[in-house]
Image (tube, rainbow over the protein chains, first blue to last red):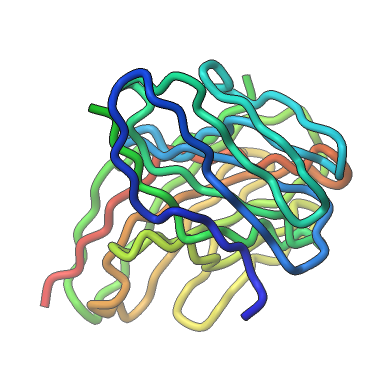
Length: 112
Length: 116
């Protein structure tokens, strides 16, 4: 099915461990996004990629890095996980025509 | 800062009744899009309804409609004939028009409960 695929769906990390969240879309969208969702905070933009080969910081980029590997894939890396990074992470691509985003199903990350 | 504000952290409605969720936003742009997203317990983000700022006519999608007041920068969602499946978090969001300005800015959400 066409859409945005995120892996993994759940992850538990120890403080200081690293990991990469994977995201891929098969809709030929140019722009892709990573958000984090925390209770009472809504969704906040971490990083985005307006097109292949470009990435830019969003509202809350500290502690994260991203890679736009190709037009389909946009990964988010935590180099040294901290408990403050416990959150639900969403990847999305822009649908175009002003129809907002297509979202992945989210990754629930817990850092202990 | 260009923000989106949802002033009601939680709302409750009786099944079959009508409920209105509030949203205000701040922007210096004249062209933009506004959205309401629904997030059920499954965590999936589902687009409920969208509004183009240059259109005066309020958007409607079946039981969902909006009251868009551009001058007041207000964008409320009305749910008619509420159903148990409407229980979810609802997020209001704004997106500037075109190009790399496509970042969605979200409000903090309103949790809607539906009582049988």
